[in-house]
Length: 149
Image (cartoon, rainbow, N blue to C red; front, top):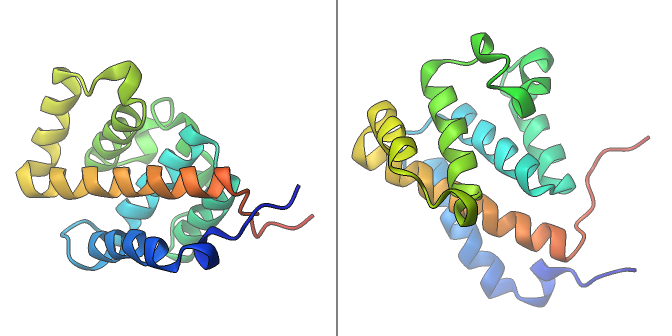
């Protein structure tokens, strides 16, 4: 079933979400590669094909190896491939994305704060929240991935 193009149907809403994305990618101290790594993991947890495809490609364009990109779903088993800060970001991304189950536990919060500090942790959490919103739009309106057979 074809679904509406949410970007065309509600351009002001799309612009508002885009504003959050713009803030995260241009006005924070978070590296672009870290942001796309978090965007990819959040999208994997949520099962958004369009965003998984998009952010995996973004990571490879930024110079991340295909080997590392392939290990993102199992980053905790392939921890040696990820920096301490990347592991902290991935753990916090999963914690916040699964907030109905985790309730953003004190242990996870403490670990994330130690790795990022107050401002960067807030910005990271905004990035996670934004990606969760984009995933819900992409999944709900079946935005297709760019991948071809």
